[in-house]
Image (cartoon, rainbow, N blue to C red; front, side, top):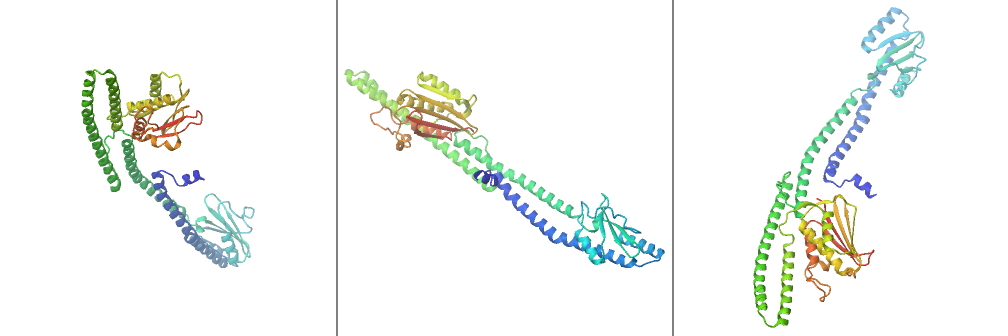
Length: 435
């Protein structure tokens, strides 16, 4: 049922515009054809048949009972000029052995009208491919045979009229489609630029085109892009200064500790200072996100294999049927994502860390499962919050998954946590768009 719905109502803007144009045109054509055929054309044909019946009836009454051969020939000669048909008299029904009804023409109404007007049986039939119709009428002393064109009982221009109407409508639809494609192309260009900007790619030479509303939306996107880039740049500069200001006193404290005679105290303070440096470094990475790295085409399969190799952990198993899964990404940022999730899986997993890669036309899906303790379902969303830790006694600063989510979303993707049904631990699924 859903498939039939999308067949009738297409999802694309071009398809819906096409239906908006074509359906009214088809309805107009059907209504026009119905009114023309049922009203105008039937009336015209009925009047043409009535005229033919009147002429044949008058001719029969004129020559029926005429015994003078010369008078009969004169009447027939004159009527052939007026009637524009072949008229002759025969001693028998000339075409009595031929079919009464033709394959091409239906003579029911004409035959009925002639027999009713003449009050006698007649023979009406199709003669040749040229469209001639024969009519044999028995009279008192002989039989009257006439041949006339099929155009006397139907209008040959009807199909020409309909053909012109259909051809004109088709031409109008084609012209409308050409204009419509230009408008849709403008929307597609705007969509492509928005997708690239949303996934962190560089938008080059985007110029809004099309209708006024589309251009307005395009210029609004450009303004938003510049404003966000300016804010990101300002934030990075501020964070750089903060980093410098914070590292300076930490360095001084390290120098003081180096000169400290109390070994136990200096060791404890040095450990705390290292944690402060690590916290500062992680915070800067989280705040900066991906930095100023440019996107480039890379094989995600090769990246995963490289990161797995760096761990040297026999518990890690990798499954992928993809031989060429290239995607436009910021390589170093994605490497950081993969390192982070694999590190978490190795830290909490017991015997199995299973990684799987699947690629479709639109998405790249990376799945990481382990057999560790897992995470309660109610905490699946909270673990992405900065500085969130499930247990204060556990190591880390609660920034790992927050950084992962920031990078994945900057690529236009999404990350989901769930319980692993196969291994009983945590299942992380990362989806990245293939643009």
